[in-house]
Length: 446
Image (cartoon, rainbow, N blue to C red; front, side):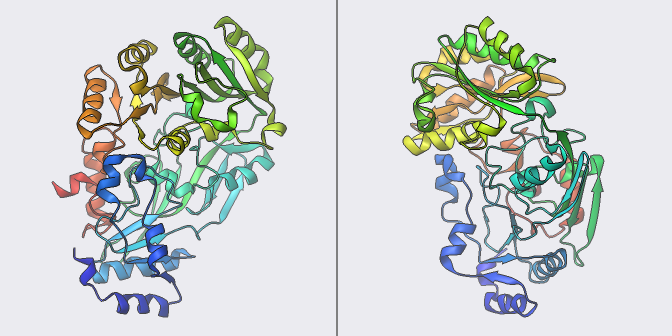
């Protein structure tokens, strides 16, 4: 695939002649070829020079079909992009080609009780704004949900706020249907329902261009945001697990941060101390009495409490969790990086906390996996060398934790570490020339 040798002027003009929006400005190409891969010093070195040759912004599914046919005709690599809020190079074009920016496919097509049908470019916060008017909201969302698109989250994300209840986006039922465009000789529109959607979810846009999504919604509660500090890390972790397992308490977000992570949250400096561990919570206003009793039981101190109306006027607690923690920490110390860890048990969390100390600062996000609530997280790592980073990863794995490595850009290496034969078979069907985000599915190259 030698995209720089293609007749780009001819291709650009052909797309413009069909009334598509085409961007070739170097500055825009630089911007729209990137995501937040620079969180990883390894990916930063590998991906910083990668660029697309053109950006195309379709406004309709019909325009997506035109781009798909053009890519097949010229054998052009195609990389689908949402808002570019991912962290491990999902939308970085390794082989140049066309970047398909779907941000203009941004219509909410149908909204009713418990259900929404949307185009992929709708910002997740906009879905919530509309759906909350009828008493519903998204089941889960990343910390970037104000700017992230729903298509980008389904294609490149996995968990977020709400995962303490609903697990991973790939769990059965969290996506009801997807409509995709293929890159066959004659591109097709395919509708996938139920388990069929698994071939496309978290596939980095290697298995079809999403043009519509049907998603179930969750009931809205009046959410209260709290910050709770602890003098003892073990107590903070025990509290997080206990709250997450409390079936009678409705919650949306349970995160625990070890000291000294509080020093990086400048906007919350009045409520945190670098010397104290703390939890950031979103719980139902109706369950505050029970939450306060649990906080007291684990010797925590509430330093911040805002109801729904008050929270809307300030920074949402969500924007200090998930990978916003990494973003805020790196804004102060750019040498920091992170991992993505499934600890499975609080005992394992405490063991690794004692072993690494401040070299790996524990940041937990409690999520539901196969029906059981577990501590997962995105710990901050003081980066020194690639060799040391790999040693840290290897030690975690040797201790029985799961690592979704954020320092690699292939689906398999960044996730389960295993080839998904169903995903590979589906790619052979819908992308026989391997044009979609080439290099991101390791199985295709083996």
